[in-house]
Image 1 (cartoon, rainbow, N blue to C red):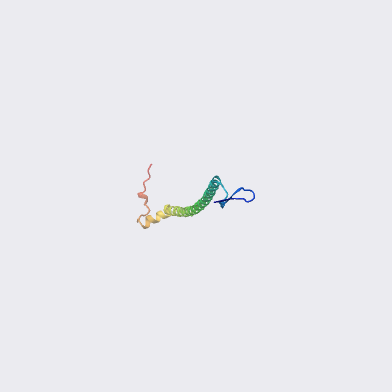
Image 2: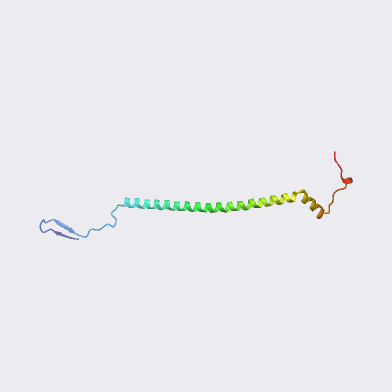
Length: 113
């Protein structure tokens, strides 16, 4: 640091380099900006995460609907098969062909009071 006097006025002049601030702000302002950036980043991440979750729930819902349709179709087929197996014509055919049964004669029928 060099100090010299002005030749005309005799006032001392400080001839040293002035440090230039890159950003002209105080520490409170910097903390506020950092806080705002974190807040913005947090809300952005939250928004993206909620959209991702909504998409995943949509895919899951679609899969569950397909599964429901498949199960309903299987249930319908099983009910139809049960109705066919319980039908009197089917039972009579099974009794005659597989078990060798025949219609009872009138003497074999007993009516209970």
